[in-house]
Amino acid sequence: MSDQLLQVRDLRKTFRVPGSKTGLTALDGITLDVGRGETLGLVGESGCGKSTLARTLMMLERPDSGSVTFDGIDPFSLRGKDLLKFRRRVQMVFQDPYASLNSRMSAGDLISEPWRTHKTLYAGRSERETRVRELLDLVGLGAKAADKYPQEFSGGQRQRIGIARALALNPDVVICDEPVSALDLSVQAQVLNLLNDLQKELGIAYVFISHDLSVVRHVADRVAVMYLGRIIESGPTEAVFQSPSHPYTAALMSAAPKLDAAHRGERILLKGEVPSPLNPPSGCRFRTRCWKATDVCAAERPPLAVDPHSASHGAECHHPLVGEPALSASA
Image (cartoon, rainbow, N blue to C red; front, side):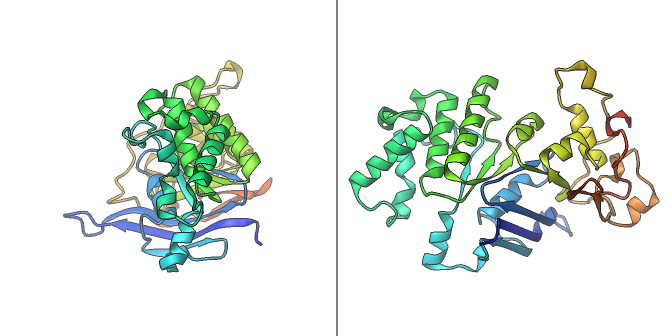
């Protein structure tokens, strides 16, 4: 088997908008890989297409073009029982642990609900009850929590139920859509450590979506930075954080809070607002806010500039920051 579990190539998705001739381009040529048992961190400003990409990977949206290959299979070509079987392999942990759980269902019912559709996975009632207790123990709640209702739990405990529900179908990939953003900082750390422990024990892969760079650095093996529907930089987590190649990534890093004053550097203040995806800039999407932009940035889409120190780290930029003191620039 290939080490790459999930492969996305040139994925495009445009939504129709009343009054617009071109539509809203949410995904514009997304290419990425997710390996077995690894965590891919997906970061970017609101509206850049992260959630649309997650929904497409969950097969809740059908792409206009491009391909998604999961373990050598095109999931969008599946039908009937084959499609139902595939859906077990990709699950999601949602952002809001309060809105994502039905308050009228007990924790045990919430976790076992997927088995009503996937009836062959755990057929007998006693088998299901045993598995519910195992999952509750796995996420640190204990078997006694099965009879309690969501309103009897804290936010962090609710998210643990959401994680247990995502694991109920024994998935290979879990898409985590801002899974800790609604939690207190101390609880965030507990949930992140739980996700790390589960990955080591079960060998599952994560696509981890977050605005919080410190969280992504803690959990991700690799990072992909999105801007207006495109991945503009990707690479191993430490390579991207220590030496960002794209000016946008450098600006994100400079804005992240740092406790050590000696390593804070100069803040990069970007001019202007994020352009509308209804009418994105020509050439480089970031050029209207970039202090390094030149005429070529408006005329041509930038090629992939590979970091000479890391072949797996690259950025779509005509003027990459490789070898420069990225965080000393100002805009």
